[in-house]
Image 1 (tube, rainbow, N blue to C red):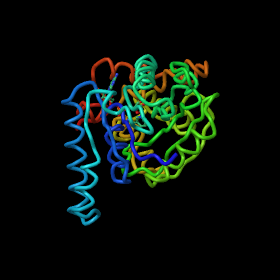
Image 2: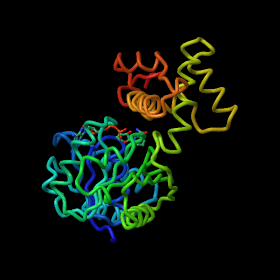
Image 3: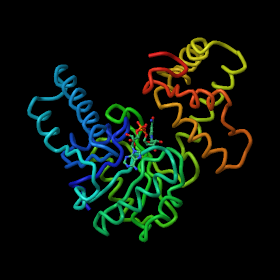
Image 4: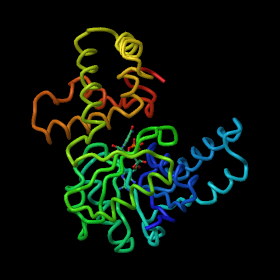
Length: 282
Ligand SMILES: NC(=O)c1ccc[n+]([C@@H]2O[C@H](COP(=O)([O-])OP(=O)(O)OC[C@H]3O[C@@H](n4cnc5c(N)ncnc54)[C@H](O)[C@@H]3O)[C@@H](O)[C@H]2O)c1
């Protein structure tokens, strides 16, 4: 199926990025969140991003206008009933995601594909919330979506070949490179990345170095664009903790236990960039 219309559920940092890139690729997008104010905020953010790109000569005024015209904000799944494909990018919580999938399955056509942008939760478990799990798949974009090249595709136990082929074609239409991961907690990227971030939290907790020293050591010592604590702030500490919990529970090994300091920061509401304070202040 050539995807011409897309429902994006969750207008946070990931949902907004997915909506922006899809609209720029010629796809009609229905962006959905819990309330209209969140959707409007996301649409304003996308407009600002596109205007910035246009001012740098990376986008024509005509393409900017066309992309914005393809973006439709809504608070209701019913408005997206004709969408060919849905990507869910709500909070990293299994119960919340299962409810969204059950609602999407009721609202959309029976042949519409239902993808989740989950960072860690097994696709097979999310797929169990709908009656035809062969159309459910993991489509894991990286943050920030307009910049990052990768999409990890995860097939659940029952995902069909057609669902996989359509998902891969959509990712490529959006200019992304895909890899395939088995349906295991954290998939490839977060199975490796989150234990490193978690170890940096333990290092900070033990006073191995300051947050600045830990980040500078890893940035300059391993040639990555940002240190692990800065990256954790960028991802969102609540999201990092949720992924660490999924790894710990799903893989059952003590080495994946979340650092108490990470848990404490989340309890304090220090969620990183999105709350203006995490391991660093913004
Ligand atoms: N942040 C990252 O770096 C990153 C990277 C890849 C994947 N992800 C995954 O993407 C998903 C979203 O992450 P985010 O960073 O955009 O989070 P976020 O907190 O920025 O946004 C989540 C959005 O979901 C909305 N929401 C919650 N429940 C909803 C519901 N029932 N219906 C509609 N909207 C609902 C919230 O209002 C919020 O706007 C998570 O599954 C996360 O693991 C995040």
